[in-house]
Each structure stands twice: as structure tokens, then as C-alpha cells.
Length: 115
Length: 107
Image (cartoon, rainbow over all chains, first blue to last red; front, side, top):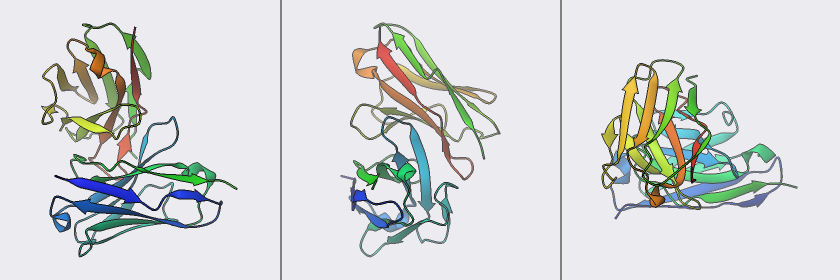
């Protein structure tokens, strides 16, 4: 059974950093690109970043470029999102999802940026 | 960036109604579009792939179609379990972009 489990969320002050993780199981993680998608409370979905299976290709939304870094460790079956210079508008539920079909999603992890 | 204009933003319909939700792409995306269903407190679930292909396990009352730059999700006969938010996503070109979403409620 394919599973994606996010962790690392929480309450953080503006300007601080946080690192999210997404642990994958039930499939060959190293064969798939991965995505981060977020959803602010009561809002729609926003694609955040994508990374190819071997980390050769990485893409970001303009809203996070220069502040967020997507990475992966295929030996640990884990996807990461390093978030720096956090802003109140980054408050959202963050999902990881398998690329390119977006067929499997995690349950999401909440990030709240507030003083 | 490719803009996905989704309509309506919300709608109410009765059981058994035929319901159509539309996304219009600002540039050519081919058939590189996915429709998602999202219920409260749940992760999005893909319903339609490549604009017209039904995902595994999705009831046949759901269908996807394309007319030029307009993409539609249709529910042929609405059931109570279909009440949810629906989102479209284009994955033709980075940055990937979602429509703003449609909230489907029971009348």
C-alpha cells in the first residue's frame, strides 16, 4: 500500500525556518518525482515545488522561490521542504504528492506562521 | 504563467442533477489536466486524468471533456457522496497551476 506521511509542521514566528519531511512507503520512491502542494485555511490548492526522481530537475512557485528548498534522500525514502524567511502568508496545510499523476497524497501537515 | 479560470466558484444542486464544472486555460495545455475531488478534512483525490480519463475506482457518472481551452468535469446524476470541493490542475508547464476551486453543495 502506497503511503506518504508528512511531518515537521508547527507554529513558527515570522522570519524563522522550518523543515518538513514526507516519508514514502509502498512504492519505489527513487523512481518517482515528487511535489509539495499547500492549502491555506479555507482556500484553494497551490502547487509549491517539484523535484525529479534523481533531483536533477527542481522547480518552484514564484511565491516561495529563494526561500524554500525541496530535496530528497532516496536512501531514506524521504522528501523534504526546507522553509526559510517564513511569512504569515505561508500559513497552510502542506501536502506531498507523487509526480506526475498526483495519484497519491499525504494527509498533510499544518504550518502556522504567527508571532 | 498559465492561468486556470475555474467556474463556478460554488453551486448548489439536487440529487440526480447533471452538474458541470469548467476550467479555462489561458494558454495551450493540451490534455495535461487533472480533476480532483476534496472532501472536508481530506486530501485531494484525483478523479480524471489527462482531461478525459477516469481514475481507478471513480464512478462512471463522472466524466471529463475538452473543447479547445475549456475543460469540463461532469457528474451525470448527482449523488450525496459527490458533495465536495473540486479542483483542476494543469501540469503542461511549470509553474503548475490549480483552478480556484468549486464548492458543490446540496440544494
